[in-house]
Figure (cartoon, rainbow, N blue to C red):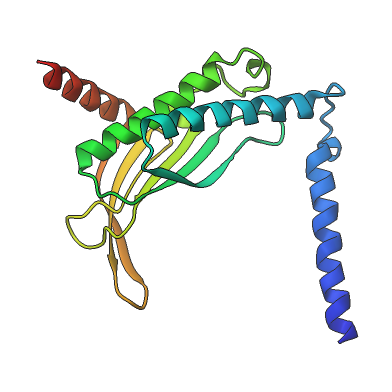
Length: 192
């Protein structure tokens, strides 16, 4: 029993040490002004919250599942994963994904106080990791997930049995710019 407790304490001590080391960045030889990390954190949280508020207004069916992003020395990415209970076609999912990306990019690039902390300005789609999972959509021909990472949009299907997920595959891939053009083209066609 004592051995178990000592091992458990060692794990916590290592985790605490790593969190202080990575948080301070002093170990990396990086020194920041006094309130640099606090200000960066406040601005990134404001941006994420504003973007999420706008996304929820436009798409109330999206429920946030995962939020993340950042970087140790500067702000370089945002991660949003959503769950959607309604099935969507490829074109509907593409529009939803592009809208989420554009809302997020608009909020990041509009925040002047965040700019000094960005790795690159303007923030671009390559800085986003966005995914939308469509619940209960399993099997060939059904869209299970659409995601955008590194300027690439993937549409995925997934097989599922009562025991486990058996296989997932990408059935369509396009660049983010292609997806934006297809959404714009669809909007123009719908307005005619």
